[in-house]
Image (tube, rainbow, N blue to C red; front, top):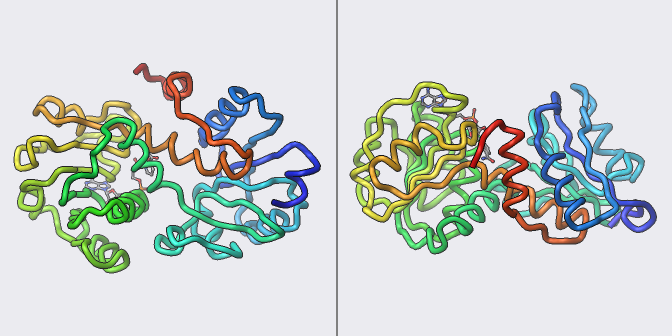
Length: 286
Ligand SMILES: NC(=O)c1ccc[n+]([C@@H]2O[C@H](COP(=O)([O-])OP(=O)(O)OC[C@H]3O[C@@H](n4cnc5c(N)ncnc54)[C@H](OP(=O)(O)O)[C@@H]3O)[C@@H](O)[C@H]2O)c1
């Protein structure tokens, strides 16, 4: 750890531009208070062109942070400019969590951990299935697909409106990952134990086509990584068709756990109190 951890109260932040929309201060602030840790977590807007300078100051300790979360548009730059990158960040080519140790910046990506941990909490044993279908091929999809591969799924089918993007992702993530266009959705859903929406369909009340989930395995889980609204139109449809569901809010909360652990030395719990606070902030009720 760099000196700021030993000599002053630990301070972490979220960097981005803009950064006002980030809910990370709420999450880490809740845990700092809950565990009575004398630390700080703040928003740090990094102006366009200034990410290199920020990283230098983070590395040297001049910035005064033990680490940070990274949001848009700096996830790729943070990965590139870090000194040590773990396998997850390397495979995805983007980092969302940085920490400083012995004057070196370490980078990881915790989105996949967040997704898998959320499913672990909601539906223990969810990863028994052989086959999963992931709708979408963007940033969220890449973390989810990698997490599914790492949890041992034999076949992960990416279905995307733009086939080229699905193919690129399948190529990058390697064996056991297959790319399809929307016309193949019904066919690849046949017998699958997990369906994950990673597209922005249904976000903030946007229109969503009708999905027929009946080809899925009867015990399948339908998950959405969209978290506004809490119960998305896709989850509503899945519930009405008798499937178990998982909301995207869990991924958002659990992805914060490894960072807190690194910066503040304690593994935090995603508890009901945190869920209540974040839902209130989103204008939702559980
Ligand atoms: N819960 C969490 O912690 C978490 C984490 C990450 C993301 N998210 C949420 O996940 C969603 C996607 O984020 P992202 O970063 O992955 O976005 P992204 O990189 O921009 O990817 C968007 C994806 O949505 C697809 N899409 C957009 N509009 C569509 C439509 N009308 N019909 C079919 N497909 C459509 C895109 O397809 P094309 O490739 O064809 O354009 C692409 O696959 C957002 O709502 C975001 O808030 C949540």
